[in-house]
Image (cartoon, rainbow, N blue to C red; front, top):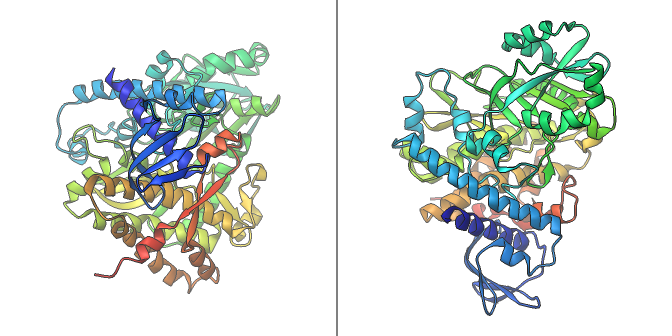
Length: 563
């Protein structure tokens, strides 16, 4: 079927590009546009175009006797581990299903001239969430990882019930946990859920439970069926855990699958749940450290952003909770985080959209949603990139250089607030990959941060590495390469807009902190680190960052003459 062929081609090209960019396998250029892997059956890759960050427009992959059209045909010629091959096959299968779903949904949706025009048409419906709607239109998943749709542990029925690209509507199960068997940071999840869902409070009392004796952990329905009921049988039998399964909470799945938005409501909390499923490279449970550090860092960062005069804020993590008995596996499989809803504080005319959604194909025009934003404003792409960078970068650079916090602000972790398709401010979410430098963030000394996730560092190069990969490679870099491809633009002209914003920001920062000079010099080095996602996976070190050095696109942008 056509969806499978498209999925095979896309994942094949992602895989080939990753193996080359991350230097997983040695290769040689045999012509200006052809490189070769020297194997028993040599493999050739024909390249139409190369980009500054190592992106490749691949024309074909072939041997002397055969053109390879799927990852399976390539993998059978490579000596990679069987588990990784299974992950890639699973990604192809799930991506093909996602394309099938997208075609059906597009036909049902009808016609509109532009995403932003459609959102304007829906503004009278207070229950309509542009954030949820557009996150569920991210069909491909991760832009560069060949396991972008890997979801080991799910069958097709699970995907169609719970996955965002299938308009997943998980009904979350509140599970009461007896006093002394949980660790909680921040507000009480029970009190939040009681306030937002009166039916949960009613079910709680209906079961004869005492609020002083129990807390609540919201559980994803897949996790309840496949993990909790099996792994925690004895705790359920004793009444240490009590499922309020008659008061399930209606939600909509967001890009990450396990993070859920309230259905038909833009005020209530988002819920980050644990699911014992491998997506891309990692199993997506919720670590005990993250349930503690999220609410703790929220307080610190809210204070920092209050001091700064930039249009950047954080999605506050109001509460984190995890089960205590048993080993770490037990603890992280029964855990959750409640996050403030980024649509809760929107003003008239504002629309919140995840940055990852901007890289998705518009269901109306077929262009990227970021192109819809450009067309809606009727401006040049270069000016739009400057607008975007001016909203995104100054606050994050100030946060890193002045306060010592480097956020992993890749596409999925940033929500952009638009007004008339113009970027106005950004909201950061998820503290999983953050790095904090003690010497710069003095407030951290007064907090109880769990260092087990390598969150704390005394090495400035770690701050730069997190910033470089997340912001320059897997955010602005993806946007710039996409616009260069689709609009036949000069890559350097787009990067020049980013460079101007960064240099302007550091002019100010030099007056505020002595660290500005060192950070700026590191950012404008000849090369910058890029996270090697596939290399990390193949070395089974997906929780330990590994990097390769790539040409610095900021140097490219600096070479553009002023006009």
